[in-house]
Length: 89
Image (cartoon, rainbow, N blue to C red; front, side):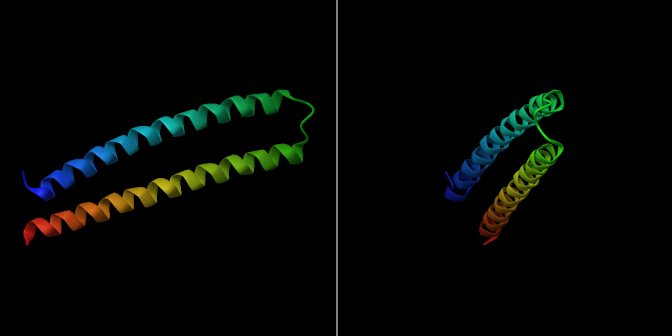
């Protein structure tokens, strides 16, 4: 079997595992956010400034999570481009 083909299979498998893991992680974080938001709205002991800080933290986490995914996707794309260049040679 061609080593480049084997590497492509390995990368595709790794990408699939990452996508599924990332999706589950994102779903868990979104559900946790919903539960936390409901709790914050019902809890009268939490001040508005504290709520604002928590919501900003949640938004920062989402943004960082999306940036992380973009970087990983770019890495996979670069590797696929590299491997397709090797096939042509």
